[in-house]
Image 1 (cartoon, one colour):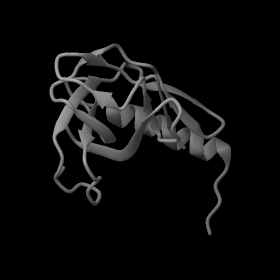
Image 2 (cartoon, one colour; image 1 turned 180 degrees about the horizontal axis):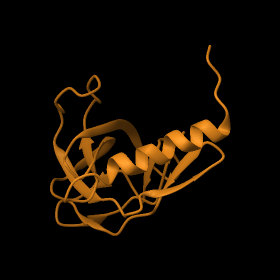
Image 3 (spheres, rainbow, N blue to C red; image 1 turned 60 degrees about the vertical axis):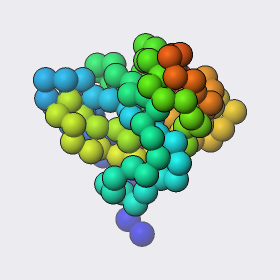
Image 4 (cartoon, rainbow, N blue to C red; image 1 turned 120 degrees about the vertical axis):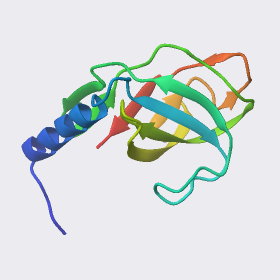
Length: 129
C-alpha cells in the first residue's frame, strides 16, 4: 500500500480545483436518482438537478478538499437523489460520488434527498479526500 504525505495530497487536491475550473462554463454537480453506474457509464436514472459549483470550488486542508456550499439550483425532475456526477467547465467527467442529506455519510450532502420538480436544492457540504 502506498502512503503519501499530507503536503503531496494537498497539492494533488489543488490540481482537482484547477481541473474543475477549466472551460468557459463553471463546474457542475449533476444529481441523479437510481443506482450509480460504473464509473463514467451513462446514468440509468433521471437527472434531477444540475448545481453550479462556486469558483474557487473549495478549500484544501489536512488532505481534504471541502467544497464550498452552493447557491440554490432549480429541481428539474421529482425523485430521490442517490448520487452525483461532477464535471468541469468543459463538461469533462471529474468524479462520481454518493449524495445524502446532512444526517447521511455521503461525500455530497444536501438539505434533503427528496426533490420535487420546480423547487430548489443546493449542496450544503462536500468532501473529497
